[in-house]
Amino acid sequence: MEVILKQDVSGLGYKNDIVKVKAGYGRNYLIPNGVAIIANEGNKRMIAENVRQMAHKAEKIKTEASDLAQRIGDTVIELKTKAGETGKIFGAITSLQVSEALKAKGFDVDRRKISFKEQPKELGTYTAFLDLHKEVKHEVKVNVVAE
Image (cartoon, rainbow, N blue to C red):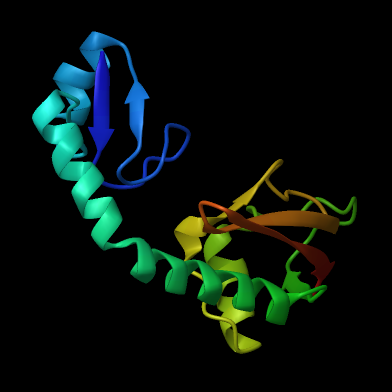
């Protein structure tokens, strides 16, 4: 089944993308929750027109995202947390903590656009992945140190 996404869906696609999904996922989750619409000819033409009209606005958003990625550059974030004697931290470092640390340095990145390959649960250096735009990705080093 082909559907047109009405918003970004992690692991599936971005707004206005036409994606193939299993029929049950499309009919029972995506469409009823307003995340997608059926990709018939009329809807495809409507989305193509909307994309054409929003192209210049999308270019501005992409430029802002790449400027933000350049400003962040090789910034290293240091997060202090309580840890045991073996180096294992109490809890885990979350994307919210990384977002707040970036905001403290003057970079406004939404916490939902930050992810980790492996969740930081010990002291050390990790890489946080920033999904600033569908074509602009960036990595930030996160040092987890004991308080």
